Amino acid sequence: MTEELNKPNFQGKWDHIRSENFEDFMRENGANFVVRKMASHSNPSVDITQDGEKFHIKLHSLFVTRESNFTVGDEYEETQHNGAVMKIKPSWEDEKLVLTYEPKVEGSAKPQKHIRELDSEGNQMTLTMEVGGVVAKRFFKRTS
Image (cartoon, rainbow, N blue to C red; front, side, top):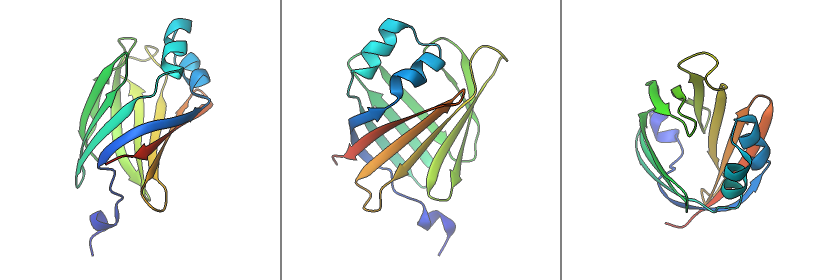
């Protein structure tokens, strides 16, 4: 059995069910008051396509649709809401999908980490986000 076969299956449609400390995370990440209030009251859905180590993640909310395509182990770049370009390194830590963000231009944004993990049945996904010592969690249920 290869290690890849032991990786969790994130594929599917996920609906947001609740958040913890999300507004503080956004504040630490530089989001203004209006953006924080709108985002903290939104209930986004996430579509994830996973083919081994290749991922396509699409976030849908009332305010924004964002897409990311990446392969675990391959660094890529993405522009954030504030215009900062981030270098993102996807990796596995045990059964967790970890995205480590570093600003391409020092001082343009804060380094951060996003960690996705599934519950034991694979029906709930927890996204833990860390920036500047602030930790937030968003919880999603699998709908398909």
